[in-house]
Image (cartoon, rainbow, N blue to C red):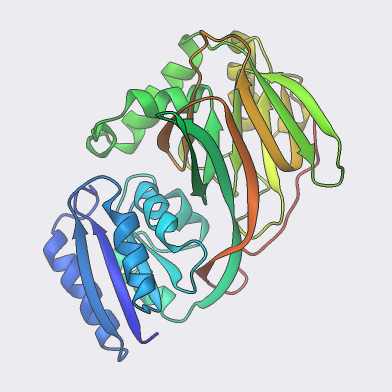
Length: 323
């Protein structure tokens, strides 16, 4: 590592003394002989352009310093480049950092990655409409539509950073269990077949990590960032039964026995509303992107990631499909 850039989310809530933390991170990199600089983001989606600029200037590694949202934004600027992605957890959930086995102490997490190897991994690619044109964005943790998309939409405006983790999950659970969610169409193509399958769902999650954390930790187990297909979980209607059953069955590790849940290994999938007036929210890596329709596929070898040996992100433990 010769040149490294730290992209700092100044609004991330876990660091009590951000200035001292940033100084310690820069010094840790410089002690290895690397040229290091830190840039604080001051506006939404600024991290994407900073990352892209760092990659264009030949930076070896860009560290996303924040939560999963910061990782998501930095990812957009690095896909398709030779610059490696590193992660320094400063957010609330830090699902991706946890799945990499990183310490939640920012300095320790950075020091861990100084001995990690840079390896290419696939990332998810989602396409959807926004302001009359097609938009393409990538994700590294998860894509979702239905309840989790509605939750993210409700928490727009920076409110998530002000919530404690337990309060956030309690609010999530209350929304999932009390709100009415209309069914929508889900079409997917299994990773071992060219045929498309049509289903109905009230919620979907496509996870790229084995553990989503907190009360969501067991909703979509059996996936990793290194796998060459997508794990798609479809919650079947009606929502008043399917959503509580999803939490209940997953809590006792019986997802494959849940009659209101279908899980499949897919190469791509599409989601679309059944009625024009149905507003079904979608999200990528915990960031609201708008409403369905949305199509998703996997982009191979899209980014280089700093990964420790024998890490969960490299393992491919496939969960049996259930219906």
